[in-house]
Image 1 (tube, rainbow, N blue to C red):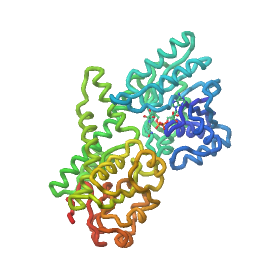
Image 2 (image 1 turned 90 degrees about the vertical axis):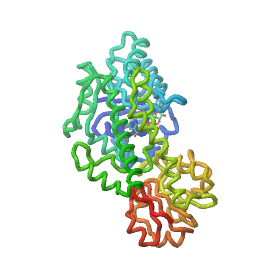
Image 3 (image 1 turned 180 degrees about the vertical axis):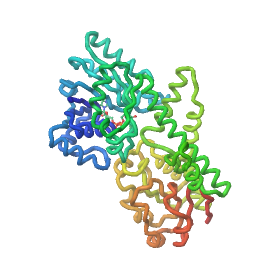
Image 4 (image 1 turned 30 degrees about the vertical axis):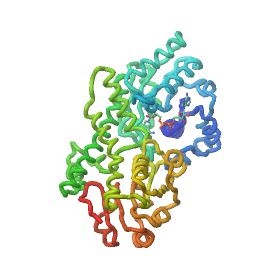
Length: 438
Ligand code: NAD
């Protein structure tokens, strides 16, 4: 099947490479010419485990190609996926749909014959209707269907998630589109991945409701963690004890510095706005978003408390900057707010990250970047573990102790246990356990 993917970002590129790997013939188009030129020679613009190999292999097999020329890219395609960004609109939190609508207009001016246009980008309920009317008014005689097929992959595990999803959601009321979409996903159907067909508007809402639910779940355990610190209980055991109940489940019950990344913050904000537009209210989601916003600076206050109440003139080292491990994505990473709050409190901040340094340099300033944990820890009065990269899971504490001005570790991901760190002479603070004080 001939497929075009519009947008070669985290979702578009992974989707294009995976569809090609299923055996489809895929053209991926992006307006960013530098990105496209790099992709043509197999240079991947993002860090995603396994993606290099997948892209290179499918380019060599002539199943995957890249271009900036949308007209050429959609020629002959039976299915066109729109996978462009839908960031928060500046100022009001609504999803900015300008890239989606631009892609729809570009497609409308170009396609021939019955075509399915699939919204893979995360878009508010009703966007499919709008895209349909954009195309209909540009091409009144065109035979086409607009389908919703939201993406649920996680950065850092994107290929596995795409090839073995918990579910594939497809929103269409049209039999013809349903048949073609079944064909697109046939390899997964054979793998027994559940394909859930529903109406287009419902499908659009499933994506936001899922992300909002996960954001609420994280925020819930984070607030329980705060209570554990006050009440001298252990949040990891609380989470485990809760999660053993199948109705609750173990996942997304890891207390930490608050959620970040390219999806949860913008998608919760957009869902709240959608509800308001319809005259409804999603108070739980609103509150979770507000609680999460405050949490990031609260993590800096935790560091300050661990340092005896002030970091003025002290050097603080941060380990991990990306919003989670195994990605280079810095969008809305908690590290950004934590760094700013520490700088505001008068600290000198050293930072490091195994993969995300180049991206971080674009969004974090006023700090010194170091190549690894040990250079970052040199002369520091505290070390803060912000992102739980594997590289920070087995730190050499005797070596750190020699390098650091004061042996204080603030572990915002609960990677370590107090006893194992304290035996190296460290003062250890984590999330959701009673803090030890200097
Ligand atoms: P991204 O910013 O990484 O990529 C978007 C790409 O689209 C960019 O390369 C940009 O140059 C390109 N683009 C913009 N307008 C274009 C146009 N008119 N024609 C061709 N290319 C164009 O974004 P992303 O992280 O891949 O997210 C894409 C969508 O998928 C968003 O709606 C997001 O919410 C959703 N999503 C993202 C994730 C994730 O983990 N990143 C997961 C699920 C869903």
